[in-house]
Image 1: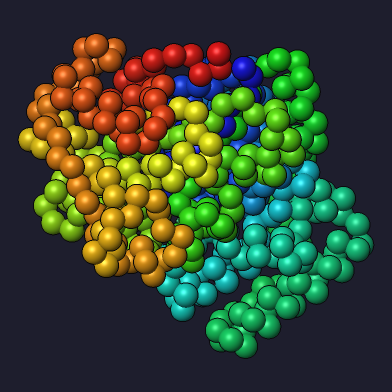
Image 2: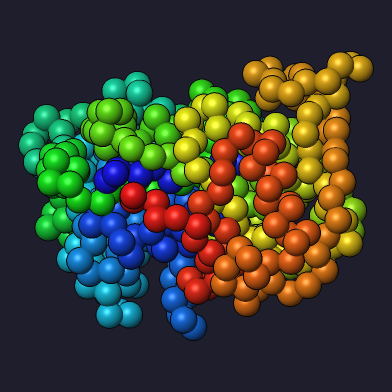
Length: 426
Ligand code: IMP
């Protein structure tokens, strides 16, 4: 096996950064395939904490090729800042490659995202993600390669686009627009400092796979934030699902060997939208505090609730999951009893499949099973056998309800607090 996709099985924030970082130790190549600086990964190494937004977690390993694929929308200013921040801490980033085809998040995208969200109330991260993907699909976006080419036709298209965006910003929102020349100089300079990293990343990945190297596709966000298969319209504008790895890097599906779904031992979501197992009282607040459930990118408090197996089964189906990685199990240490949602009750009927209609989901009540808690500190446990029997039962129940076995269980934020059942590149 050589090519593994890691995807979020819930609404994002499942602890993907930690698992990616763990696997990146073995991988020859790590690739991001969608999203942008709306993602936030915290990787802890010893006492050091690294916050990554656009750069794949593998960057901490100098021999691991790290790829920002064509499916990622790149905020060049943020990317340059992230590179500079890492370099200051001794990580040279010479192993970073960015697709020539990556669309750029322009300052006007961020402005419009903020202005529009006041009306649409999706609760976006205000990082310009939606407007940048919309322009890409509308064929009025700009790729890094276009800017680096610096041709007159790019400048003409860009000028027209700045004028058009200024019309929207000034006429609809009565706010100040952008100066074309200043913006052009700014994006040309930002692109120039990224030039040394820009490459044909699809070919690099293809070559790595053909050479039998271990390649990791690192998803951001999660299954339920997918633009097509998530809880639309409360979703992001890209494809966090496993299928997105192919489109977002230029690699065919037959090259993928394994798909690992990362699921938190409970559920969280940020932003608006239905969330059947959400806990509004003290238990939800406890999960938020103990699990440090505050957005890496925006600092927003995350909504918290019990584990939802209906969602996990859906993630298994949509992504073709072969394994689960269960994270943050230690956050549940103190509960005397735990709940898992096994089905939804909708107008007196039991639903076992995740509804494809948001108005149905909004009216669903969770049906729970209750499982005894372990009430022990498991943060120092290094093998499944050492876990209290109740914790093993909780894991076994998740596996049974999801229909997929776990390959990894995380019991704390540090790299060492990761129990691996089998090698994922095998
Ligand atoms: P956008 O991706 O900024 O357009 O935001 C759209 C929705 O996706 C909002 O509900 C965000 O809170 C959510 N979202 C975007 N990125 C993440 C993430 O990394 N984790 C969790 N939610 C996210």
